[in-house]
Length: 255
Image 1: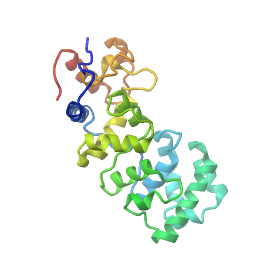
Image 2 (image 1 turned 45 degrees about the vertical axis):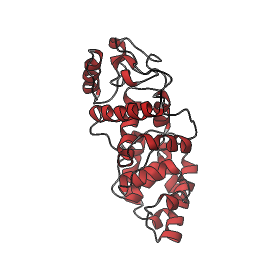
Image 3 (image 1 turned 135 degrees about the vertical axis):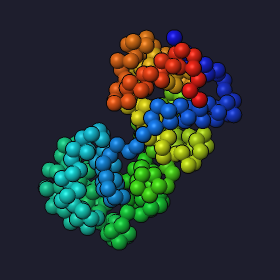
Image 4 (image 1 turned 90 degrees about the horizontal axis):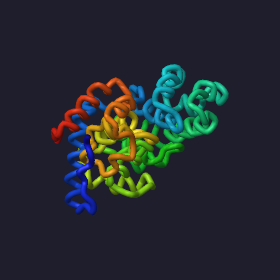
């Protein structure tokens, strides 16, 4: 049975080396990780991320085709009929607050950025409904600017991995940044989020079917029995992830 080989306390150098190994193993587990929101341009991604608060990417992707067909520019959102906009985004929840954000977002883009989504974090975070998490998603996936996306999955996993004890997303971002090469910030964010959705669940992590077991100081907080843990693994990548975990249990080092 796999068990964590992480020793406590850990030196700073040891932490950096372990973090880089985690990054390499995640690359084997999730070579095709990506933003799971559907979009074609920066404005669509920005809107989709705003809508994703307190709901799933799947639900957002069900709503956005009709939304994007109806509203194609920032000016369209700024001048949108409130009742119509609310009805289109109602399935995502908190639709009144989100409608307010989208209308304010459109107006701010028109007034201050000529209707174009800016490509700088310091500009993005001045927009209604846009925080650092949203800004980093847009920068990384729409502009190719490396950014760390600290959502609930990312924060949970990096704390379990012992990368940081911070709870505040901004502090988490600052703590994690030196552990990962800047060029990898965006893809590591996606791979971590994928792992959180598929294996390292909030309530019952699939520890016994986790490819990161030897590198995780939190190994054992979830289901450690391999057969039971494998049933907890989600997503189309499940067979691949389970196969990698079996290799780890057999003593093979993936990185």
